[in-house]
Length: 299
Image 1 (cartoon, helix red, strand yellow):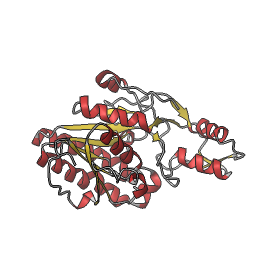
Image 2 (cartoon, rainbow, N blue to C red; image 1 turned 90 degrees about the vertical axis):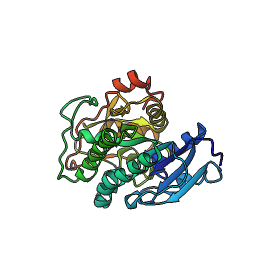
Image 3 (cartoon, one colour; image 1 turned 180 degrees about the vertical axis):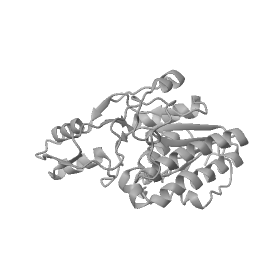
């Protein structure tokens, strides 16, 4: 490894977004140490990076402390289950990685005098009463509902980042990720796009909850990663929404995927899950003005 190159530590590095981020950092000449405990990540996502001498992987649970020798320039905290089936199966781990895990990663950034970037989420807005959602909106979250373990962990993570900035002068960044899709999502992820794709390819009915009139704004992973790197370079301490400002109904999404897959699948309606957001669309004015970032790839 070339010791003169900056080094990044990426938690959740074997995850869907984390693995793409590791690739992008290596491509810009940054040495990468990826951490993951494989609760939702996969070694397959990193297999193509392991021959790279600038890349290192360590199986680790950031809830149990993060102890790393040598220099670190960037600490990027992407570890967390991120879809309802994943955090339903691991609610306590999800709470811990957003709170204790965030504190441990911030501690690493403080010890190494590194820039810290938190992967937060549009779920901090809950089932929003404001549309589209700007960063100034405080959200409408049910802390005791089934999504509370994820939503409130991420809200607490943002509070931790701001507290470390104010108390310890850690250089912090916060991104709020809206629905993102692309290669390396798990087939069993549980979110709309992999669900619909798998069902359409298998010829099974596509499961649409409620009428399907709820909206999502869906960003492609390469655009998201460009946004993450722009925040790392030019962001400030305030949260930045990263997502697609064009919304689509879940029903339209299902119909589009049936058409693209040339599938004979039909659409099957089921009851809406508890606290399922009715509208979700990112206001990316702040990202556009602060970073000059916008989407290159539409739905």
